[in-house]
Length: 419
Image 1 (tube, rainbow, N blue to C red):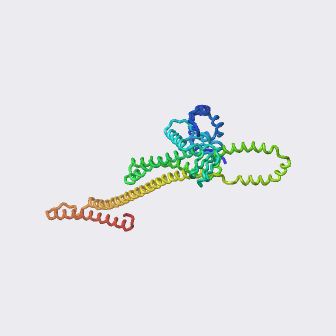
Image 2 (cartoon, rainbow, N blue to C red):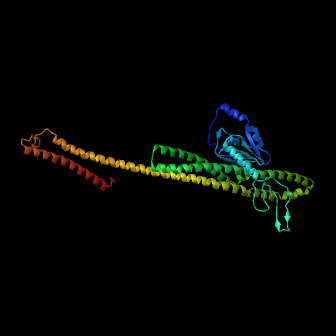
Image 3 (cartoon, one colour):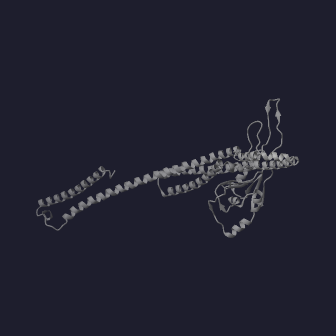
């Protein structure tokens, strides 16, 4: 089943500029399997005619639109968009939009080195060589998928499209892993600093790091989901064997021409015999449709990078878990501070009530009534006694207020309202 690319968020350009972009040609870097690379200009319809891609697949590579990471396998080409790497891969060449940025330059450098290190995987017609004198069998043959098996070992050479796809995946995984390591080096010290001292500066730094982590996790998760979807769908992986399909097309063409020459001289009696076996042939074809395709090489390739991208996602998950733990720790600290403030408020309120009781006593003595304590002393003895009564009353009031306060605090601690 053919998948359609789905944009996450499209930044819409002005209408006039959009029409010009659709009609104008774009610069492409063409890297063939054999030969020199070249920079050419192709229009949208030229690319569609060369690769057989529909217009909706080319929108994945549109610089105006913001698409997530996508790998689309089609009949004659593979469309790849991974972490800024955009490419159309065919069985014989790869087309890369010619944008002058550092990420694309490093990708092209890796692609050139990868294609120069591995010998060409074009189909060969050399016969197998058998050396029985030494007791060792050496074979040098190329199968229809374009892979060569060396006689000294079991090392397999991937087809051209898988070499390019591997470079794209490796470049994207390395870029995401590098960003994850950089984030990890900044996140843990920042979170530890925030846990030791909660300040506006530390909170703002952690907020920026968390925004980066969420964005990076989304991109890593998208690539992981894309690889997981391909690994779960054998037909999608089978569609990505472009060299094999190209070889099958050439083999089927030669076979059909040979069959037409062979059956031109056959008698009409054989037609009746063929009709008897039509049902068996149709049942055999129906059963062969459901045979699992040979996708072992691509499956192993995708599984390797799936494990790598899954490890990167696990690293981001650990950073997020540490951030959540730090946030919980800070919330506990803030709750503890809040509880301390509430307890202090209760104690201050109790002290206010107690002081109010003392004020009541002072107010009673300040009333305009005639008692012996308020009379002017007539003798020095009476003056001494009046002064003593004053201090006794003052100290008694203060001591009573302190006793009431201590009793209130004791009652609060005993009832576990205060700690």
